Structures are given as structure tokens and as C-alpha cells.
Length: 217
Image (tube, rainbow, N blue to C red; front, side):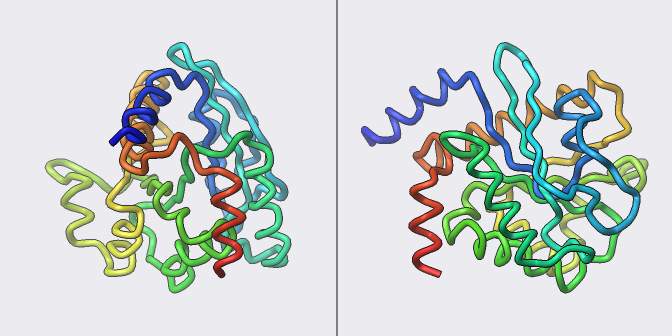
């Protein structure tokens, strides 16, 4: 209880949120309100090396590290893993959250079913406690009386499993929305992160957790 109270006090005074974005550069650009990361319409990742961007937002600093996609077919898997792992070294003292992306309307592939396992292979078992599912493409596939909640209820079993592994943390993100709507989504995302950290009773995913998790694999 004392640890939770201490973490809660820390969260109240957080002035910088450190986020690792696993493979969707357009969302990262919208969060940072600048075209910093390269975007491709192809299925392969267009980010070749992790990059970090900053944005002041509502009195805090947002720091976002954009990485290669976990399943980039054009890069050596060992290189992708090393580059993503390097992202943690770029966000001191450690990231507050890891963002996993899925585009609504796409087929949920066999590779995507292994998403959490791939992330755990890089960062350790505890990393799933810090993962949030970002659902993009809401504007193209959710119409009339449809809702994200309704979509997820009828989603493929693999997507439901991924959501469960993220402990049902998710947010729908429309990358074509006006900036005001995007900013509201960012506020919702930051609230999800704060609640997640409070539940985890930690202020961030530390490098010690990363090293300890790697030793157990």
C-alpha cells in the first residue's frame, strides 16, 4: 500500500511521458504534431532505425521513440530486435508505455498473433503490463451505429487474445482526424498510461526490469 501511494505521488508530478511506438510512424507524427517519422503505405515498416521526437503538450513533455515494425519483412529480424531494444536506451530512465498497432479491417495474421511473444523476447516477460493496443483506421471501418466495443466483440480470436495480453488497454486512433480530435485522443492515451502505471505500482518500465526479464528468457 505504501509503494502504491509513493507511485501515485510520482505519477501526479510526471512532467515527461516516454513512449515507445512499435511500428506506426503516422500515429507517432500525429502525437508529436510534426512530420518527423517516415511513413509508407506498404505493409513493411518504413522506419529503418529508431528515432526520438518531442512535443510539449498540456504542460508536460511528450517523448516518443519510433521503431521498426516487429515483422518488417525487408530487414534482418536480429537487426530489428537490436534496434527496438536500443529504443529503451534512448528514453531514460525507461519508457512509460509501449504502443502496439493494429489497423481495423485488416486480416489478423499469424505473425501478429505472436506480437506479445516477440516483444517479450526483446524486453522480458513483464513488458506486457506496459503495452497498449492502438487501433487505427476507425474512420474507414466504423460506421453509423457501429462502435469500437462492438467491433472487438466480434473480432478474430487472435486479436481478442492480443487485447487480453494488453490487459484490455486500447484506444482507437484516427490519423486523418483534425488536430483537436487527435489531441483529445492523446489526453485519453495519457490517462490510460497513468492508470496502467498505478496498477503496476511502478513509475516506468526500468532498464533493471528489462535486464531481469532478459535473464529469465
